[in-house]
Image (cartoon, rainbow, N blue to C red; front, top):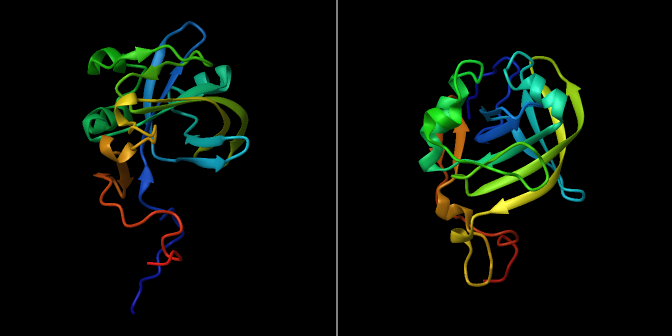
Length: 187
C-alpha cells in the first residue's frame, strides 16, 4: 500500500468536540468549543482540555481553576460551531443562542442545560505545551440527562446523537460495532 509522508501533526481523529463553560470571578459566563479534550485517568477521575492562551476564557480558567465539559449532540452542532468562532469578548453566547445555563453542584461554572452530560471539573495542574496549554482537572461531579437512561439505569449517550470533529468537519457518531471484549467472546 502506498502512503504519503506528511510533516508531523495531530492526526488523532475523530475527536470529541465539547462545549466548555466557565464563570469569571464576577459571575459572567462564557461558553467555548474545545476539540482537544480527553479522559486522562479513571481513579481519581480526571480529564484534560487544551486551550490557546489568547482565547477569552483562558485567563478565566487560570484564575478560577474551574470549568464544565458539556457533551455535544446533533441538536447542539450549530451552537458548537458558533461558540468556536465567536468570542465571549464580543457576545454573550448563552443569550445569543438561547441556551440555558444551570447551576453546577461543585463549581461556579454553569452547566449547559441542553447538553446530555455535564462534567464539573477542578483544575489540578496547567501545563504550557506550546500553542495550547493543557488544563488537567479532577472530575468533581457528572450530570446525566434522565431521558437517556433505560430501565436498568444504564446511560445511552448514542440516543443523543453525539458529535465528533475531524479535519474541520462535524460528524454524528454512527452504528455500534461491538462492546468491550466482544472480540474474544464465544459466539
